[in-house]
Image 1 (tube, rainbow, N blue to C red):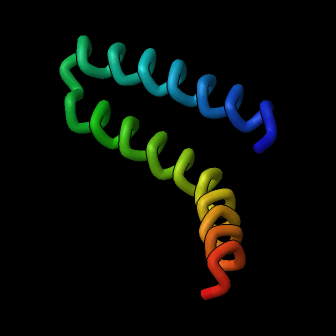
Image 2: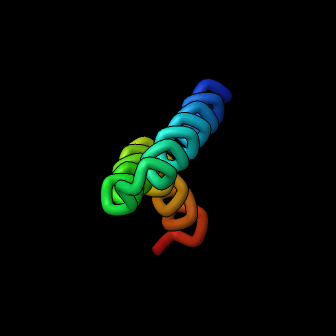
Length: 64
């Protein structure tokens, strides 16, 4: 796994946290929730190839 991916995830987490707090304080709780959900989906799209690679490595290790 690349260290840049960890920095990207951290940056998205910080950004989503700040935007979510600003939206909550302005009374837009629904948009704050959608912002958090969008950040989660974005990070999941970045992580899915690594999870797939992990499962392939486990599959070849156990010869399944």
